[in-house]
Length: 176
Image (tube, rainbow, N blue to C red; front, side):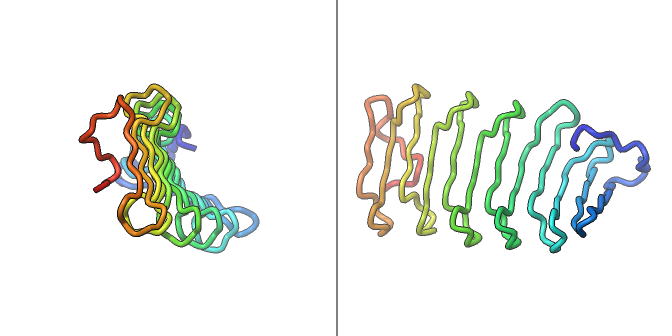
């Protein structure tokens, strides 16, 4: 939808919206926030329950991939996953997930150097704002350079493992 021109919109109005109704009662809300004639966001209520199951944003015009996709996988009105393409190459660079569907993020996956391979994983299953498990490949050689764990969820890391490639002062996860 992001490459579809919307010539029928008036250029005098800064934000333009089009609603596409589905036969089952669902709909899409397509918004051109900057008035350039291309969709900047698309919100989808596929089942007509009034909750958007997916919201896609696209801020860089035709020929570019989506910037973000926010998805409500279980239809409870809370976002369960946000996927981002920060360098606009068409590949996801960051994924933030709510795996237990409680409305709080508990996992993050990052491709820091944009090569299509996950370089950093952070899991916060007890939602204390600190990683219960995290790993990072800081030199992008395909092997973890830093790994931290908090197996008893007390807020203090039980293990912090650095390989020779990681500088000793590196603390990408808020470790002690």
